Each structure stands twice: as structure tokens, then as C-alpha cells.
Figure 1: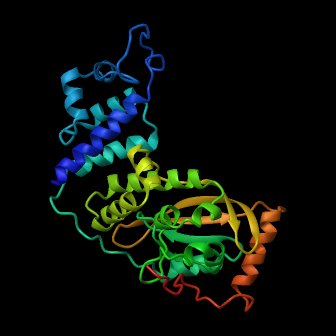
Figure 2 (figure 1 turned 180 degrees about the vertical axis):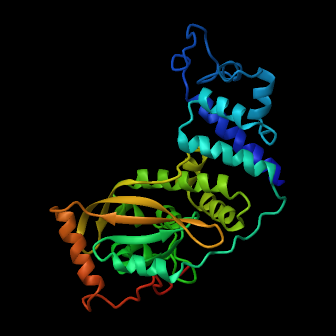
Figure 3 (figure 1 turned 180 degrees about the horizontal axis):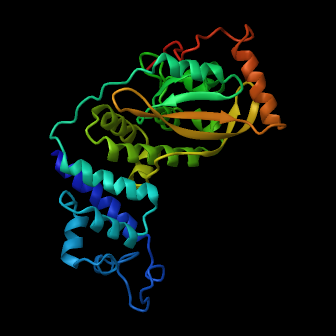
Length: 306
């Protein structure tokens, strides 16, 4: 498919989906007339955004390259986009102006030693670095112990490097490990959707989405929703095979790296005084003693079968 056709399809599906979820009552419009489609009509969005129906129809068909930021902002307000969705729309517009016919394989950025030192210094928290494709590219010993089911999964790559999206959607055990698997799956698909907006010419990212779409009906349904998430913070409940139930808070922080790359630093912690803190501390002890097979400080587990 021509690259611009892909852009137009993503823009069309995203805008149409956002339009369909807004009721006339929410937009302050009359609700007495019968409607053949859910949500708002195109002409109603055009009125709310202060543009012509013809112009908005063209925009929703994916012709976004020459649209000014002011007009995009007006459309975002009319569709009641949240901050992440607004950023995604602007990313799509920017990418369409600088599109290339051929996606390229983005070079992976090495994590500097200073970042690994930072990770290793966090002895009571699980900390790892995740790129936009949800590859886990570095981490500390406790992250390896906490996320052992993912590191031991057959979904790791040839270097033994886990990918969160592959594990969640392609390993049946993920539904036992993630207590709130449905929420984890939705968030992961939305993170990948946002990354496609930022890095549309990343061939490896496109290949990952294609693999997941082919192999996982659950991913396909979430991908079709066009939900967008730039950062994922909150509470994670895990059923760990060694220590049992864990309820942890997790925080995502931007981590600028060389070559203008930005990855996420993800930190899992437990509330002080809880059973989850005791269990996380037990994992921390195991990760640094001979109670479990010794692991290097970098996240380099033995490759699993593909």
C-alpha cells in the first residue's frame, strides 16, 4: 500500500471513531431528529469547529497535510479529544507533511552506562527502560525477577529481549500473570497506536503491529478502536508464580537518550507496610542471592524458543 494511503486510512478511522462517540446532547445540539449514524454528523463537527462541511469531509478522508495548527486545534476541541488524542492528531499531520514512500528500519539506541547505573541503584523498586515499540531494553535485577514470566516467555527475541506487546497478546500465560489483563492489553495497544503517530516510518514497528494483528484477535479488536495513550501510569496487579499476588504502583518517566531518542523509564513500587511490599522485598533478596539462578545486572536472559 502506498504510504499516503496508510496515513489517510489512519486519519479517517481515528476522526470517524472520535466523532461517533460524541452524542448531540454532549455537544449541545438538538437531539429530536432521527439519526442513521451514532454520534455527530460531519456537518455538525464542521459547525462546531468553524469550518465548512466540505472542508471537514476532506479532512476526515485523510487530507491533513496542509491544515494549519489552529484549525486542527479547533477540530480537536469539537471532537473533545483528550491531550493524548490531540497530540496524536498533530503527530499524524506532521508526519503526513514529511512522509516517505518507504518505511526505514530505525536504529536501536544503546542505553548509556550511566542509565544502567541508575537502574542498578534502585534495589527496592523494579525499574526498566522501554522503547516505543515496547521492547524492554535495560533494567535492574528486581525487574528481571518481578517480570520473570515475560523474560522466560517464548515471545522474547533472538537476544532474549522481551517485548511487552508480544508477551501480552501472544503468550497465553500473560492472562494469568496480569490480573487486569484486559486493561493491560488495551493500554498496550493504545501505546503502540501513539508510537505509530510519532514514528510512522519505523519499519520494525509496522512489522510488530502486523504480526500482532495477524496472530491475535484480541489485539486486532483493540487496534481497530484507534485508542491512543502517550504514557501509562497507575496500579498494576500481578499474580507472580513465586510470591503470589502483588499490587504495585507504576510510574512512567521520559528518558532522553542519544540521537534525540526518548524512551520510558518504568518504575514499579509497593506501598510501604503492605503485603505487596514484603513480597517485593523477598523478590529483591532472591534477585541478589543464590536462592535463584544468578542473573547479570543487564536484562540479558537466555533466549527462549521463538
